[in-house]
Length: 377
Image 1 (tube, helix red, strand yellow):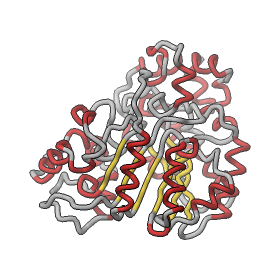
Image 2: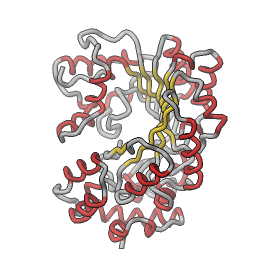
Image 3: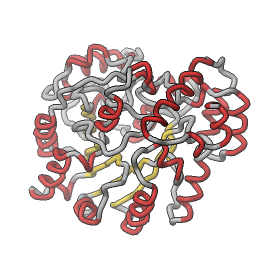
Image 4: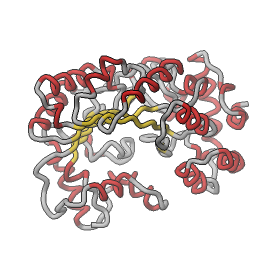
């Protein structure tokens, strides 16, 4: 079972487009293919799930799970390897009977238009870029209208919870701007399911007021993953139109409420814009009493070939970044990519598109580190 992943046996996942898939980590642009026709009501018993489990039983790597396999081939840890440690009692020879965890994105409603994100996950980006030609957008993202099937997702989530779901996760969009997610939270509380349910929420943290926090702390456990991708001006440049003062206030408030059952984790997505700003984030978090390690994701999913991937940088800039950073995961990734053959067109395109976005948002790349500024001159 060298290729097996526990999530194919115990996890339900539905994307913002309502596509049912093995997990949120799959490359949705390249590896889903026939999964796009999966039904929410079939859950983890769809033909695609069955076929994928059978491949894993034979020791074959299903293409849909390539994201994890590629990390492992580079000598890095992967979500698959992590879940193998968490779920050690699965009988892979049998078909699953119960869903233990779910990851559901209700829609793409979001209050931010982060530069490394796309209309797939942000309604605000879709609005801002609607008059910008696709070839001028970062990642060359198309703007497509989807049937998010929020009501169907809501009812199916209730069904899973009634049957004993142990853990519910959501991202977005921005969950706290999505009415169907709020409806699910309120339904759990009103029907006393919150006492036995663990919830995990990835959020930008802008709309986490005290009223919302008071709801969340009633659950068996609540684990918040707050995404920040820069410090002060760099944060505002990347996570437009977010204001640093808002996230600063909310983070300090959240940390005051943290406990064993209400945890706060801070994460960032490594990209060219923030490569040299990671140490500033780490220093800030330490200054406000956050004592955990910053979580860093080095792969820009689902945009593996993104212009913003730091692997596209010239080797001398990557060397400077190695000197400036101390985060082990970043250093490992930089070491693995610094000698790769560079595609100069990626930086040329990033230079061109950065200036388009700057003009559209009335921003200026000169708030970035001088090593990065030089790319756009």
